[in-house]
Length: 470
Image (cartoon, rainbow, N blue to C red; front, side, top):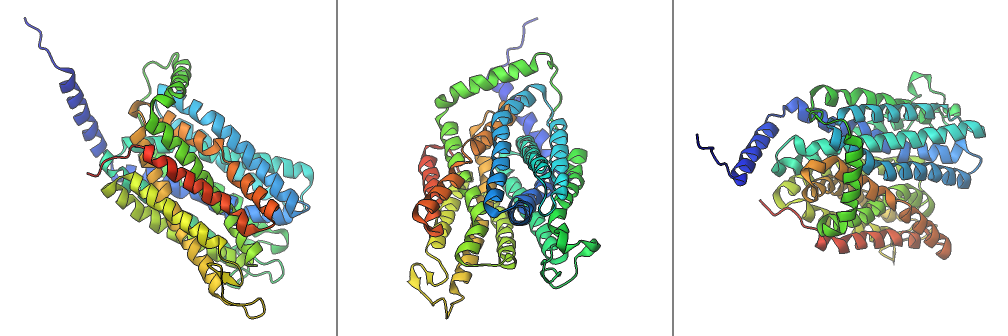
């Protein structure tokens, strides 16, 4: 009997159709479960790293603000180094062995445990407590970032490519909304002024939280841990995962071998190489902008904590809106134009910031210290809105732009490299801002390195191949 010859192209076509059919069968519960990971993870960044616990640690836990900022920076830096080294390695191993959920389970548990421990960092804590608290912070940071690597790698398996932009944008938007809600809840019901003993809306903190012991601020760690553990459950229950490899034996060695080969071949894949370099620079700049925004407002505009909190709420709200609409523009135009447009918005916001002080806007005098105008404050709030919108859109589109560069069979490894590139130079923005600020004695001039990093990221994007408009 004559054998039937089937062409490789036909086999590939049948395989593609099967994959598309599998993708189309992902349930709504599965999609929502995956998106809720961003909802679960965002409070760690909003409450602990940015607006609540970090300022409390610097102001009240350690002897002085200088030591506090240095200690916090070391902990974040150590966590970043761990993430940079291990993310691509773990990603390569996961790609070789199969499922992502077991990894996410372990790292979510790390993030929750580290976050919970922060409750024990009381005001004026002793050195031993501070040391273990900073270890807990580094563990929590590594856990949340590692979990994100594996969660991101699940994304291309859930929907067809033409729907990835909307999926990523919706997830980021959901995350911003989650961060916004917990921030509002903490400022209005839990965190109180140590002098008045009341919250932002003038009420006594709930649950008997004692302002004198900063229990509202410390509770941010417990709230973050509980939030992560509860809202990650739908992903475990409903979101489909890839099957375990039938060749588990030797998978670790093979995964590491393929990772090394991928690193060697990066220069041979110029689009991926350029994108990793570009995203490394602009994500570092964005993180620097987030980190120094509140510090800048407090130091230059003399804002109080409540004003910084309102600034954070505004940035989170516009971040959700930016991620939502950025995802839809991604689907229509592809992710690359969204990234470029977002970088232009972020660069503009940074320029507006350095031209604003208590008596000037765009370097034009609008008042005096004795007769202060509200325009500088309004301008800074507007910049916060632009930063949130641009940041939300660029983070959502960056995930899908990476998918366009990566080998579909090595997706977790690709997101591991993405995490590596995001952490490998994470020291550039804070160190350069600190150096320029100290050299020129000006917080405004100190923001210039962030603008430079955004522009360098833009410079590399023409070498990145984006998805063509459908």
